Structure formats: C-alpha cells, structure tokens
Image (cartoon, rainbow, N blue to C red):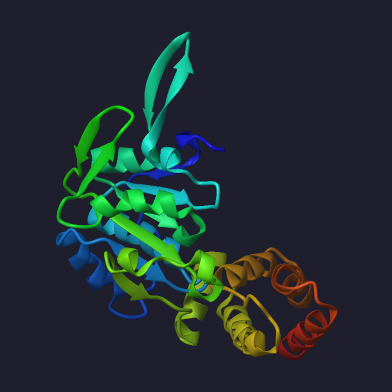
Length: 271
C-alpha cells in the first residue's frame, strides 16, 4: 500500500504542456473552474485526458496533483495518515488534502478503479460545501480558492462492479473526449515524436485501420500515446515496420490471429 509521497505533484512549468484542442473542451473546463464545478473526463485510454488536465492546470495557473487510482487505493491514501518518525507520531497529508489546502487541481485518473468507500470521501468537495473532513485529526478543511476536483475513466472498461454510482456521476460536469481527427492526430504525433509529417500521417492511417478491429476481438485499440512511441522509434532510426511490430502490434494483443491480422495491416501501410 503506497503512501502519499507516491503521488505526483506538478507546479507551473515555463512552457505549457502541448495540447491540441479538438472542440470546445478548453472553454468548458475554464468555465467549470471559474464556477467551482468538479469535472469528469470520459474517453478511451491514451486519447489525451491526462495531457488535457496538465495543459489546463498550466493555463489556469494552478498546481496539479495527480493520483493514479487502483483497487487498493484507500481513503487514507487520499486524505493522509499518522506516521512514526524519530520515535514521534506525525501527521502527513495525502494528495487530496494537500490539493484542498493549496487550492490545487486534484486529478484522479481512472477513478472507477478505486474502492467505492474511497470515492464517497469526494462528495463533500463536489457541491456547494467544498470541504473535506479529516476525521483522524478532527479538522474540517474548506477548499482554498482555485481548488478543483477532476476525475477520469475509460467507459470501454466499465463493468457493473466498476462503474460510478449515479449519485456520484451527477456531481460532475462530464466531458467526452475521444481520439483526435486524423489531421489533428498527425500533428500531435509529429510534434511529440520528432518524426517527419509523412511518417506521422502514415501511423495515423494505420491506427484508423487497426481501430476497425475493435469489433473483431481487439479489446484495446491503438492510442495516440502508442503512435507517439512508435514514431519516436522511427525517428531514432528503427525501420517503420519493426517499430510498428514492437510498439503497436505486440502491446495490443497476444492472440496469434489478431497479431497476424495487425502485422498484415502494418505491411500494407509501410510497403
């Protein structure tokens, strides 16, 4: 079980994290932040949800605390716990508590993976009260100006045991994100990897064909993140087909039939 120090806290960088908007998501997020509304981001793995939050934290001038959620995440992991140090007992804030105190944006990635009793502690921060009870210290913290709660999840992985309750969902402004358009995705791949534009466009075309295999047994389709990794290998001198086998095909499936089908599509794309 990890302690609070494992969670990433990111402050303002000199340069904005690169993000290419595909709709009005920036404006909606800005308005939600201004009106102290919590935000829920829905979209497939690797479509840019985390990068979007990083970009918005920079744009809004707020520190960002990111928590990758998992099934062992407890309320204490978020709020904090007493620790033994030098024969003394001291309190250490968890990432959620730090964000509340500092007026940071707290981003809970893949929140449906967390236990339901952990998610419940968020409720008082998602309405007009905007406070966090810290039972172990007897404190009730009012969120500092600028605090915002943001959660994300991949609807494609929803299961009955891994969904948010309606009472939780209705506390958030929901934004549906998806893979960018072909032109935008090619721009992102080129910008993030350093590969030439022609390679970026070819990889995006390949991804489009592979994403069509979702209805043929492919559980996870290639993400923009995978395309950037592949393009980076190509830019580093790895032959295109070999890079695609290693960074796209192999991570997506171990099923021999699917792998053969994907390799055929790679070979047809990079003749």
